Length: 206
Image (cartoon, rainbow, N blue to C red; front, side, top):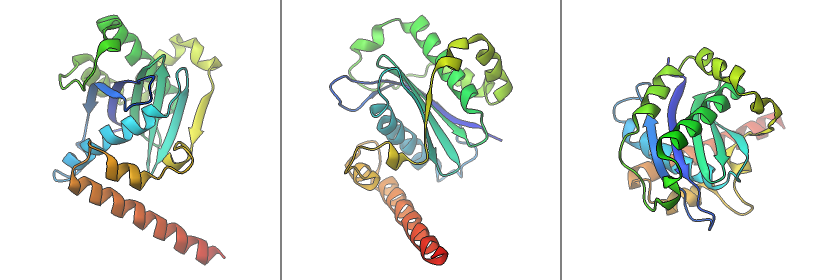
């Protein structure tokens, strides 16, 4: 069973513009063949949305259905992991810390001058995606990275709690250039159905 769906490294821009994708690796084997293009687009869209709203020095986790999206912004260089709900949170952040260490070891500060998404594969990220499917491997990193024990991790129940006041996910979906028209429709329908379900549940409980 796939526990990590994707790992993404982004450059967060201090001017507040959309983050730039520096590296991206995903395992979509748990999704149907025809779902995969939309899922891949959503990973990029959701990654930019969360990274843009993760301040420098902050670690945060966002619950999205049965998944958690973990984000760590280290002075503008941001790593995200899409894990299932059972992947230990601290193990997830030890992995993201390792990913950022390896990225800076390989590329130094060159990311600071990148102006467009990078389409080239970074082999280490694909290897990490496979190796750390087992949380026990990430636990080994956790024992080494003691500084995580002293760092507060902010947990969010939904993406809505990350968005600024007045922002709506469906509006961001409509404006996104990362999503095809088909993906936009699928996501908007999903948001609408979730809202209806919540409304019906609230009425039943009351």
